[in-house]
Image 1 (cartoon, rainbow, N blue to C red):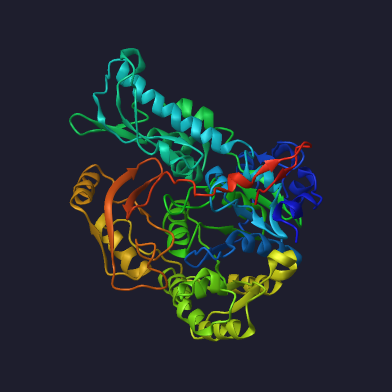
Image 2: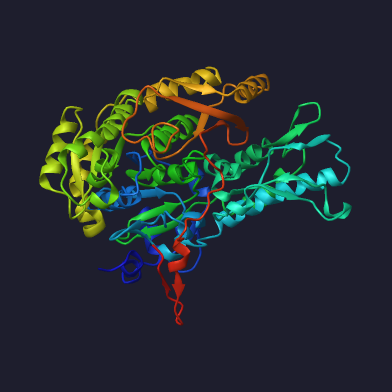
Length: 555
């Protein structure tokens, strides 16, 4: 059996000019990065007129170690729609080096449903993440330099909220002390690093709708507070212009292709358990402007990525999805039903149906909370039995939702034709899209609404410190922003071991912080961290390069 990388390497790619032509992108808008990659000028959105196409969101059940295959399904669905002669583009997130070298792996799809060149996309790509990290750390340097040079803004070094970042899982950098070694080395203080995908600048880049909007958002970033408790912004430090200069090229979406030569825009990638988990607004809008169908994805399960896509991205950008695909696997549902990972290959209809309660809640959220039509895509494995698939189909019939096989990993677009036909049908249906909460409500009520309506719990409980933060953020004028809940991806609750569809639980919010540039309030729950660590055996141990420069072990 060929690996994903071998499949990608053995599939001839078209020159990026040909892919652009398929998408209706004139060469005048292309900025080439070699033969198979290009950035697309933002002028296209201003100069390319026409009606926007349909928007299809791909999300998934609560993830498990058994795997779901969300990105693979997204890519395969786009190829299947293209096979049906529907002008289609995909809009995907860029992978982070942290998961690539850590546990989760790359994010370019798999099998015969990949975006390519997958090795370049999973590594440095066009340098967007490096630009985001540089802009983040420029701001950090300017903060400490301001304090060193006299601190005219009266910034309290103990209340600096801006952290440095690096695109790697490095637990050693979570909490550090810097500025040591004498006066000329700066002011000693406690500091720390986040992974680049957790940086507010990543969220800002993905939510910005123009270069001017980007610069304005950067200027609103709160970096800390003065001795008399007033916020200090990047604008106050006069950093926004230089940060924008670093990000000017990164703001342009990246054009690549699937293995079947469907055009794809890969751009941005905030983590969904930390930030809002969606690709850029600009890439999504550009794809919708060019294609009749745009297939996009959101990170992790529907309670995280899809909720934030709908409540944050769609609210800010005025987007309205036409249909939603919820990806599931029989293996993952059995794990939600209590089966251990080493026993997933054995047929177990009862456990699968017990675990299907997780899927049922995601379906009801999409249909009843957000008012959108949906279909369940079952990413099939060889050991899935007909009895298990039939039982799942019958269970979802009661919800008025079809269950369709997805065999795109093995067959490419051909394996997603039934799914594609159902998506086309759903896109023709009337929907009643709504948000899960009213942004004008208090922070507490918004968190309560999310907990009760989307997660299935009772309420959100704010610690005393979080209550004080909510009060202060409201006084500063940030109480009416959407909320972005940072919580475990492995459960509807804030406890990663609570699988399936738990009820009667509380979500504990231990801290609140405002991402004023991005335009939302972040609620930190459980022990969620903004700097992951590497596993005992990181994927990096299996990655190598031969004497001819061919990479191995990258997936």
